[in-house]
Structures are given as C-alpha cells and as structure tokens.
Image (cartoon, rainbow, N blue to C red; front, side):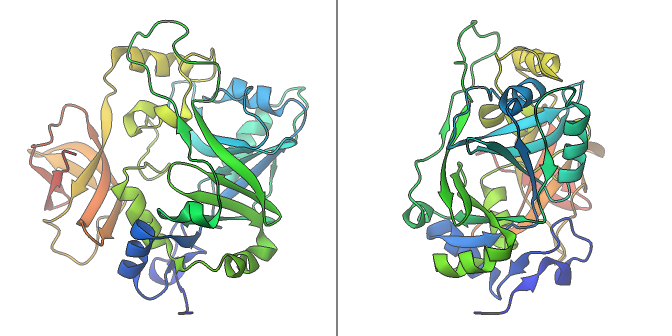
Length: 346
C-alpha cells in the first residue's frame, strides 16, 4: 500500500491533524468514494461516552433531538445550542442499550464534556471523554452497504412554517441503523457507515475489512459536493441550525423546551433564516492555493458571507461551501477574496 501523506505534512496546525490526507492519488480516491467504496480514517474525531440510567432523558432535555424514544441499536444526530439558539456542538449519536455515544468534531470533545458536566445536577449520568480509547472510521460510497449490511437512514420531512400541533411524531427525526462490529459498533447515516472501534485495533479492522483506503481530502470533497455543513467550518458563533440545513436530521421541532428552542421555533415559523448554505464554483481562483476557511465572500464591495470548506473536486473543479446572506440571489456576481465565484443554483 502507498504510504499515507498525513494532513500534518501538508497543513501543520490543521484541525484535521493526525489522519491521512491522501494515499498518493487524491483524484482516484475521490472517484473511489463516488462510485464504489473506500474506508477513511477519521480517528481524529472526539468521542464522548454517556453511561447512566438517566442518559437519554437528560440528553433529550438539553439538546435538539427527541432522544427518549431512541432504542438500543439506533443512532441519530443532535445539536447543543446556546441560549440564543446558535449552534455550539453537533454530535452523532449512538445508543447501545447501556451507553449513549456522542461523536463530535476534532477537539470539540473537551468543550462538550465541560458543558455536559455543568448540566448534570443530581442525575444518574457519567459523561466521559473516551477519545484516547476509541477511533472512528468511515466507509463511504454506494457499495458501503455491501461491506456491512445496514438499513438506510430514515429522515423525516420538515414541516412547513406554523405547522399544526402533532405534525412531528414523538420520535427522533432521523434514525440510523446500528449494529455491534469489531468490538465497537457501526452506524449507517445518510453519508456512509461510521465505525467506532477500540483505537488499539483500528489498523487490524481496516485490514480485515479489505476495502481500499481513501484520505480525508477525498472525504471532504464528497462532503462539499453533498452540501453537508461541518461545525466550525460552515458555522460561526451566530449560526442558526436552519441556516446550514441541520434541521431535518438533527432538530425535533415539537418536543418541548431545550436551550435555544425559542429561537429555533421563531426562525422556522418565519420561514426565512438570515443566511443560507451555498455551493460556490471557484473558477475565478487563479492561484494553486484554495481560499482558507473564513475567507470573506463579497458582492458589489460589501461582505455577504464567508467560505467554509474549499476543495478540488474530481468532476466539478474548484468548489466551496459558503454561508451567505439569504437575500443574495444565485445570479449575483461574487468575489472570494480577489477572485470571482458563482453560486451553484442546484
């Protein structure tokens, strides 16, 4: 196997340090994930385990998802918001019958654990950071279910503004199938199959699966094409869930009070969040260097948003996810830094 080129070697100090960027041919790896299946090392993600008899009712009360009905062998996604409804943490959720597992962005496990501990009160829960013991790997591609046979994710429809009471069932808005695997578990969401396995055996699991490897660059290119926002890249300190398409699989709109719920309800009822997630074509970028996260997007000399993740896609060329003001039309002439860009209308 070709020696991996680590993120650290190409971008020292990156939030994604510690995992392979590619294995010698990022374009081939993208095609692999687009057309077949590959395994991606995402072991830099944080893992928080929450055992305890009150875990599901407690997490239900402090996050956006309906979790009291989450059964053993099911997963979902939930958000933890500020009092003003801004996204603070985005977590994949897996319930195994004794512990609820939360997987989060690299480095976010410590802030999330601090928040959880401040919200414990006298409940029977014992949240703990287990990132050092557990690693996340991802099978991505249309043939992923041939490697591990798991049912597709179920995601409910988002009701329209000012919907009638009782429209949203008292269940998680998204349900991901989960099965024990390799000493941990596997969970199939709408993008692939994530495995959380003992970190000491991660290399052995990759070898046993016998699936071609792909680096994080290929994974990120597929994520950008799919317009899937990532916390800390396509979010900032004032991001609302509706602005970056986190409602459908991460927010239950009728489950009652939780921190930030009033803002979520108000924005949904108005039907027009202040900003939106957009896919930009960066054909005007002349430099070999892609714009960094946070690069301003401007129109007619005024700031209208920012770039989150920019990638080189094997078919679409240079593209980026950006968060822009909602009133910016798809036809508006844009600049990213000093270079022209255009919104993909699809």
